Image (cartoon, rainbow over all chains, first blue to last red; front, side, top):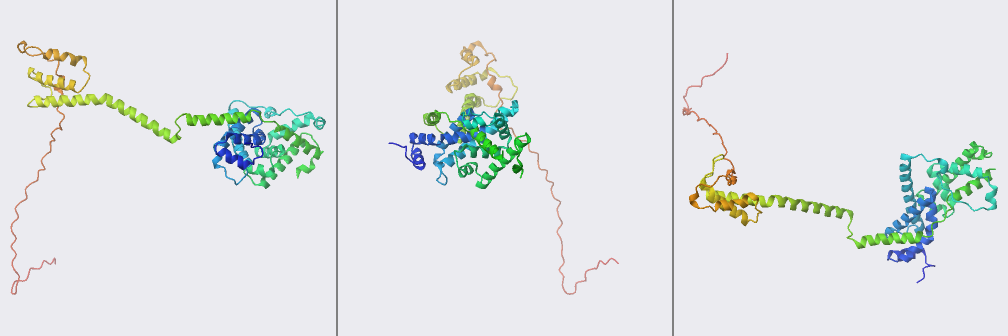
Length: 196
Length: 193
């Protein structure tokens, strides 16, 4: 029986009855969103892969506890996000005991495609932005990256972070403002408007 | 410049999360689920608190078994030896007295009862029946065997309770009370003037 056109609630119901193919379909549908959300929190592909797998397994384990109050995607993303934050805290605690990582290499930036627009951007500016994003407060950085990833709506991100929608929007805006301030300090552009 | 900066921020932020998940993610997730399920159904699945209870019961049973193995036969042997000693001796032996040849039948009884209680005999007790089997005219048997006779009786020691020492009361003289009636003299006043 084909499950390509089946909705998430239907797949969830089948997975609850032990249909592994249905759960596999759910994994396929949401793996990009889960992976990118976890990557936004962790910054490394390896860690994101591991945590994303853990999140899906945990979702399968607690599938009976899922209620239809929110969408399956939001519920799944909140599980993945909590696991990612736990992993991030654990890694930071461990790393801070032994080594002090340089901030510039904290994030493993994926190799971007060579579009014409990207070629126009100054590489130095992009590196400076990366550095400043990495130095943002985690709450601001998470909101900015999740919003910029484009996989999830603001409502879904707010549900995932368990914060009101207005708080999420404020955090994204505040992250941008602080970034522009920092970039202005190092000599990028006249940013009078960002100081308000 | 501000718009250009916004655009650059968006682009960099998108790049930081633009990785694609591994293609094997689904297979690995399902494999993990299968392993987890196999681990539960393959073995004895119990909650953690139940495992703690099982472990406690196991430790308790092993401890009890060891304790019974060590103390059980010895205590039964002691009991049988004490019973044999009390049945063969008319009066309890005082501690420190020298055992005589008369005690040998009691030794025989003790050894027999110990063997009947399936107690594994030691090297010493295994040699004792040979000595007991000697003819009567040989004389008194050597006194090496009957150590058990030195065991003090297990009964409670007599308690020395001192007397309460109640002194007898002195005899009280009977009181004579005269009746009071009309014409009786008035009682003498004891005014402290």
